[in-house]
Amino acid sequence: MIVSNDSITKPPFDITPEILQLIASISEKLGEIKASLLIKPSPQLRKANRVKTIGSTLAIEGNTLSQKQVTAVLEGKRVLAPQKDILEIENAIKTYVQLSTFKPASLPSFLKAHKLLMAGLMKDAGKLRTGSVGIVKGNELKHLAPPANNLKALLNALFEYLKKSNDHSLIISCVAHYELTFIHPFSDGNGRMARLWQSIILSNFNPVFTYLPFENVIRENQEAYYSALEQSDKMGNSTVTIEFLLGAINESLAVFLNQQGNTKTATDRIELFLEQHSKTSFTRKDYMLMFKNISTATASRDLKLALDAKLIVKQGDKRNTVYQIKKV
Image (cartoon, rainbow, N blue to C red; front, top):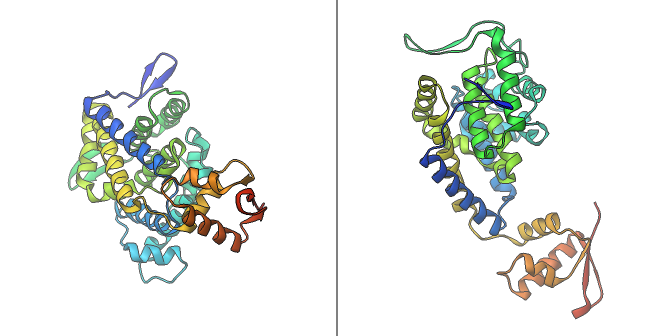
């Protein structure tokens, strides 16, 4: 449900003490991640978390593949499973790989993502539904989506909010998640699109969210997730859903910090330094300024490893040594 509010049409929700507390806790964890230089996790953790993201968001929709099977599909291996389930995973892999190319406040980008995510699974992938839809549990109608002739107006209003709102990005992402499930713009794939679009908004806010599998927490608390969506429907605003989703994000960040820890391999440090160092030349001292907890001997070993890998070249000797980053 979306209501008019001065310059933009703003979806209704309240800022509760719980929401403020969760934003503070999330911000604290993001600060810890930044201070610990954990913005980009190791390749192994990135892969594992991407598998959790894809497996979890589709498991919510009834996909039967295990994380081991999702990993196998990601690696191009054959998997014995229903073809529809495999296709769902393959589509999700293609879509999440392109996460950074989608524009959070663009309706055409949103439709393009749906077409990619649902290719081969429905005839009208990437197109708004033309009929009525509802969510039924047992014999009870849990949610009746707005009429098809209202979709364009509702979506235009939502994406205008995503473009112009001054609300905190964490809140915007949760509002988008709820509103997309409420509007139900497609004949199928609405839940996975809502979760995907929240990931896109969050990853534009902070790159750590690119590989944060908050969908895994949703999957583990699926009944509470559906309950939050239903309560928001009854209340006519997304407040309860925002609280639930912020809680899922906060828990995911805690798991991420525990997974990653403060230890980095030499390869991790070299990769991070070469990505973030703004100049083409540097000294060992510059390297140690980024990694304050390593010794001079460790820094020297790291730089020798980078030299051997031909990632950098060395000029001068001893105290006058300067390293040059090789252009790719």
